[in-house]
Length: 73
Image 1 (cartoon, helix red, strand yellow):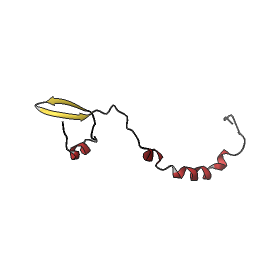
Image 2 (cartoon, rainbow, N blue to C red):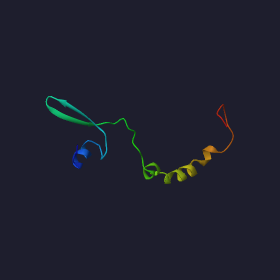
Image 3 (cartoon, helix red, strand yellow):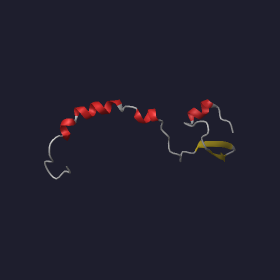
Image 4 (cartoon, rainbow, N blue to C red):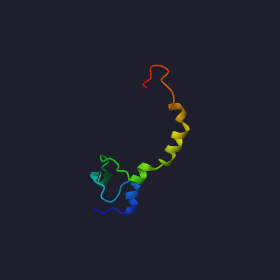
């Protein structure tokens, strides 16, 4: 079954997405099967990672010193 790209976008689906089909009151209903986990690209996974080094530098003081109570050292 071919679904136009504009409709796929409205359904939050893409080419190759598995669909469930049903008929209700004479209408065909197509729904994306969402049991598959989203796959992320490396670029998506690393988005914002450039700020981690700066954050680590800003909070380095909190990692210095010995344990003060019952926390793990």
